[in-house]
Length: 498
Image 1 (cartoon, rainbow, N blue to C red):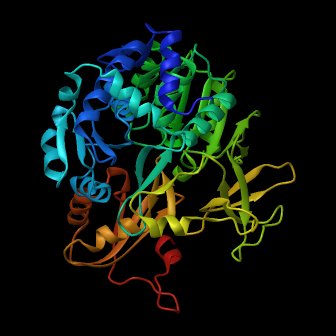
Image 2: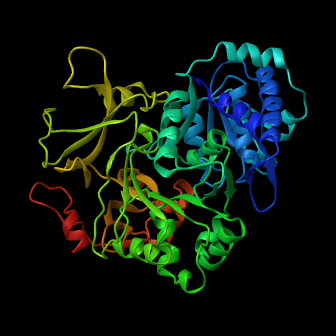
């Protein structure tokens, strides 16, 4: 039985040491090279980092980034990946939450890392690659490892205005990867096409599936996803067979006529998640790739990426709303009513998840953890922690789950989880802005900001870009003379969109 992802890597190296595991447009790296470099990094870090705190990784979108992840794990620590293109204030908030001893940064991010480090030491990645491998130190670290050890911390949007760090164990990650591989039928013959940023939860599939199956992964440049023809050319040049993309990444080429140019000739396994798939988009993909397997995936970061899947075995209609399917192996999914009683079949309740795939909690946030990860109210006999997703769902007569939206104001947008309240808090910090309300316009598929005050749309946008990732900055901004009100004095959100 495997108890650590490094055992997956080492098994893969024994099978195919010279095979390319990761590739980008500039370089490539073999299984054996990943193993060697990761052990060098782990040896170096074992002498530098002594506190046991997470190690922050500020690196580029390239083949060396997963190597850094493995190197940190070899050192006996968990890693917290950050995207250096995100606003500095947001990165600062995350570092403040982590309070790390060490930040590992690529040369291009050295200055940025220094400006947000606080008391943390900043080390350039090249420095931890200069030494040798200390087998004794690595062996000692491994002998103390456990399957329940934290593996990574990935930050998501937080309703209080502060990002939340979801901490996931080796066991949870390994359970999910095994389940995903089984459903998608991934083998060593597959070449994965990576779309997600490497600090984002969806990227764990592309990083860890290769070390479990001896498959390969190609890191697709971000700009290709706004150039559909170039994207399809890259898929064909690299002979990509399998992708796990956000719905938006599949929507752009389908709506911009990419299939009129060419077709991804090798692509046969397509998983999508992050938001509701428009029927017209999936219909286009099905028509041009009739032999491909399409799988709709649902789930939160707190349940290690996803918890249910639905394989689309029929030709969809343009108006069709897909189910979210059935639970992956090692996931238990059920619904609760507001009073914590079980939801009847066919009725709508809050989706809850339990099993070994649950996250360890939110890092340095015990109150948030205690609120979200709770004892199963249906089980008073022994300890069974569940996660209440805040999503509404129902179970049909065939045992298939259906999604019915959010209970609160958290949305999935462009593959990311977004708290609308976080955007409002950022907007209220803008000088001369008085009141605001952020809503998601489903018809236009965009985040909209309505506000009052003496500032302009341009001024608001400029300030928001200083604190929020680009995907969270509202595409639509409307200045009002006054906010519409309900009888109870609250903002009338429906009136805003009418």
